[in-house]
Amino acid sequence: MTLLANTYRTLSGTKEIIESLEKKATQWVVYKDDKPAFFVDFYDLEKESNAMMNSLVLCTKRSIQEVLGIINIKNNVNLSVPVISRLGYKKIIKSKKIELDLGPIPEEWLAYSL
Image 1 (tube, helix red, strand yellow):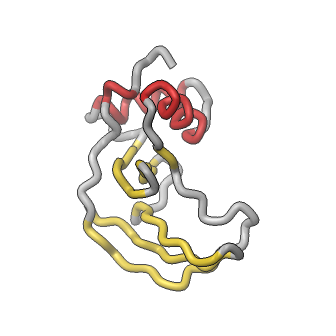
Image 2: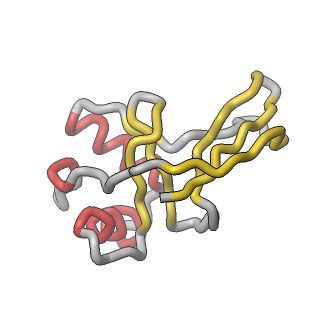
């Protein structure tokens, strides 16, 4: 899958963030231990993992950060969605297309009983 590796300059230094090409509000690159590991698309319902994330985020009206926090606690993992800048200052200084093979979040982590 083709993604964008954007390097941002912020007040705290430079950060490289992997993002989808289209930057939709329903598509996320999820990091595990501060490295890109999974790709979530809430409307790609052909994958069971994406359908479960759709239910957990959109149907329960929670943010993806809240759901990932619950998954982290229940499964003792470190999943996150990167934040570029907490203060709002950011400037793209470099952008390149990269190929990464990111799978969906494992279904066993996405129990409906959250």
